[in-house]
Image (cartoon, rainbow, N blue to C red):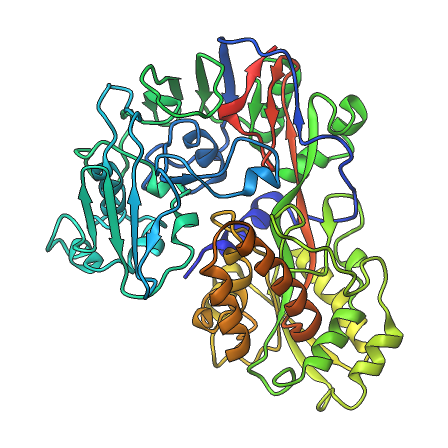
Amino acid sequence: MRRGLQLATAGIALGGVLAAGSMQSRAADSVGTEVREGGDFRVNLGAGSFDHIDPALAYQGASLAVLNTVCATLMAYPDKPPPEGYKLVPEVAKAYPRVSEDGRTWTFTLRSGFRFSDGTPVQASAFARAINRTLAPGVETAGALYTQGIVGAEDVKKGKATSASGVVARGNTLTVRFKQPVPDFPAQTTMSFFCAVPPGLPSDPEGVGAFPAAGPYYVDDYRPGERIVIERNPHYGGRRPHHVDRFLVDLRPTSPEQMLDEVERGDSDWGRTLRDLLFDPARGLAKKYGINKSRFFVKPGLSLRGYALNTSRPLFRDNPRLRQAVNFAIDRSALEGGDGRGQLTDQYLPATMPGFKDAPIYPLRRPDLRRARALARGNTRGGKAVLYTLDFPQTLVYARIARRNLAKIGLDVQVKGLPQAAFFSRASARAEPVDIVFTPWVPDYIDPFSYLNLFFDSRFIGSSNNARFDSPVYDRLLRAAAGLEGAARARAYGMLDVRLARDAAPMVTTAFMNEPTLVSDRVGCIVLRPELDLTAVCLK
């Protein structure tokens, strides 16, 4: 089970509902400046935005942004703007890994030259240890979602073994064997759970503090709730750009407003805070600094909003014309507020994803009721539908807008707002009498698999496939695309995205949320993917 849905909804709970509109970015995605080497980059991550520095446990966005500076992973994404920055490339691995014919065994060969900050060479045992730390007894980590399918993982979790039998490290060769095919495993290795760690690094349910790292930087000092000091790795053997001497991370509690005040004054160089606050007209960041110029940036993000149509229930089962009708009838602009906080969409992949094909499938600005009514005619099957959403005020408002939209094509929609815990337990349950499910989504890693396969492959019914979409034809196409590499893989997914949205229509998507970033006036070398790439920054 993946956690994208839970993360997306947690963001709504913390930051207010993320409205969307149609603002298009016209500036470049990186801001060039004359590079000055050295200096201290000051980060403010107060107000509970940071959870762990331990790569086995970290899961909040702020934590992952910091860990990105110290982690070396088998595969990675370049420190470049998208779409180039979303193309999977080897980092510590020499090349794309070999996979067995049955898709269950992956073999990585490591390049030489990578060293931990204490000078120790990085070998395959560093990655084997990273995997086994996510399985250690008593360690509660989302990383286990990705490693529990490895052969022998259960023995480690039960304390019967210290290493999964399916993880074999010999020198510079790492072999990982799964019980079932995992075609997206190379992309999964970009996550911090798979960050190279010293082979002797212990597992701790509370997480470790300072530790040697193999990335451009390492954690020199960590005091929970107070500070983190991140220094340059003097033995770094990779190619990632890195310019500042150190990162000084303030973890002392501050309000979101105070954090932004510090960045505006220049007391901090960057901080992570509530998205809505960065867009607040009262603060007026866009008016003060412009957009995508030097300090305030808004880039198309990866967080998706939409509604899954339950194809296992009588209303939408074997009824693609009605599913298409719903897509034509929905007023995407009204549902997302129309205030420029997102990119309206009728597709399932972000426009910045390599291989994305922009196709005019459904109307973005206003419904096409003529087309919707023609498709719905004779296919409404009694005309009753139940919609589940969260009981947050704004999500309820949007659900009621959808109800009014669908009434115009003969669907009488009953809206049920559920508390967060109940929503997660019931939204994907097989026996629930629900036809339409609010589906916000934040992927754990950047890959088309984390949208199309997780949404629509029948293997994920009961977890991320809220549409309960079960099609042998699309299962075959999705799994075939996942098994490809490079440009061929991107093209296959780009075509599948269009075909799924246009022909099968198991989901109504409304917007990909924009990601805002504010930096101090001394920050240069700004790369946004879509948030600030800390590793690449420099000081003017």
